[in-house]
Image (cartoon, rainbow, N blue to C red; front, side):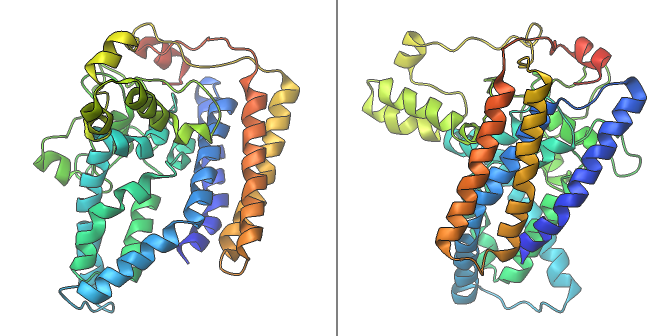
Length: 371
């Protein structure tokens, strides 16, 4: 049922994306970058496809643990149950989110969400396909508390939907709730690669956990946020985006001569590498002042064709979400393959000729309205 709500929400997401784009066009005659925006939404579709085959299993595990080992029986007709688990979920989400930024193998699941060098509503849809699966163990204590699966699925969905509106530069600081609830300003900090902002503001809905555990930071007017990741993806392929960090870790695991490090690196903080591979294959340092955004040049027909291909996937993914329990496995896999082919072809068209025109410095980003 949760996937039905996602399917129903797709037109509304697209409407808000269009309104945001119109706002910036009216404000300073800039618009969303087509290549980045289509890739963001394509990553979201890849995630939906992956979760069609995985999320049901996770929910079954949660329901089994809750029914078999739950310590308490909760009244689903009580508002207290729903309010309590809304905040309990947010607490565990904070820790799952924080671990996703600080443990190498978990970063692999969350990384796609941060790969975009822009910050707008399309980024909210750029979810990591493996994120919820890798974070799932963090929520097992909720099952052991006896949280009903219906409550868990609902608060999970509400948390995700809440976070859509915070992915925008169109909204400044919000009076009264700033620093209490998650807001666009607070979440811009979370997506920024500026040194003062890195690894801050992990909360989903409330900022209390960040303030309690020392990860809270305000957005400073004197230092505009610069977005992306410090190991840039530099591709529009929404499929390989989900395995980019896995491939980096695997390469290091294969190349290191230390048997201990072959295992250790998966569980170390993000960016940790074995000493021998760091020496033989060093990563280039990230230069935030001189970095240029990835922006290959494509012609008009390539842009038009990419839009057509992407648009063609929308009714198919909606059909999959609505009919997932009625379709045979072979048909679901076939439709999924068609969608993935269209998205890959869309990315191939947008690859074009590589050029870099968008300066990623805060000053350039602000002047162009694209930070």
